[in-house]
Image (cartoon, rainbow, N blue to C red):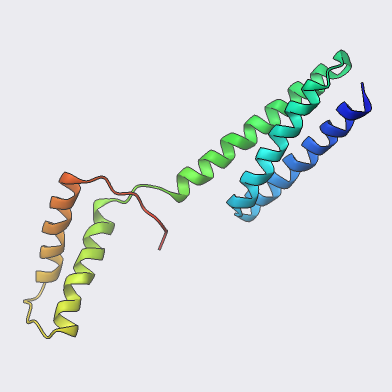
Length: 134
């Protein structure tokens, strides 16, 4: 195994460990950067050749692939689609502002009912994605 290949495999392993730690800490931006660096180091290790350590690169490739799956899952969980209940609550809170800020008289439950109607019409026409968790 060439010295360059050994060095790149060491770099890949270090970046993969840093990616795993960042995922555990919830730092998705750092995890993504570390994953990209691990993938690049793995590619370079394979490019330097030398058949003495094919199993080692296959194991690292699996590890990097598993980290990619975990990273994609974490990003997908972060951007979970909004459901109708959340939308109704947000719109109803906005309608209640009319009552508190502008002094508009609303009967009991009217804000919730109007919020539900607005949310249903919006959901029928648009697709919403959650931008942050409450």
